[in-house]
Image (cartoon, rainbow, N blue to C red; front, side):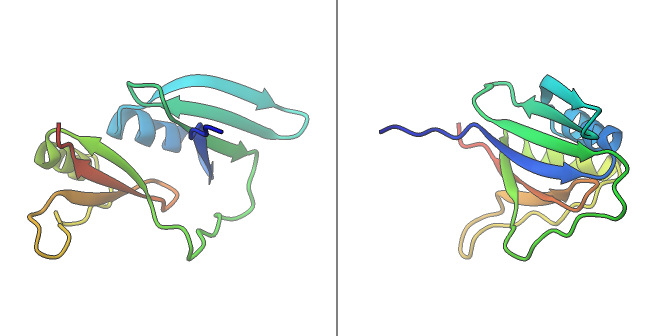
Length: 128
């Protein structure tokens, strides 16, 4: 049997803020949207340029309080060719951004940027 990843779902408090982050800061594009007004939620699917994986944003209408990000969640990861320019862009956009880092003994090759709901996104220097 052959399996492939299709999408990851995260719940968001403010759909417009989240769409701005994922579209403007990370260059994702909306691939489809499903509104369920009777059940009071909307699903928005975003993808990168390759279109092989999607991020599903679930927006429940009028959430009462922010979602708790469990201590088992770590991060999503994306790659970019110009790591330093990407980090500078995210800082200029006002997002929470970490210093450039690397695994022990390796040169810096990644940083983290935090989305409006507190989810961390690891940005890794592309190797090709």
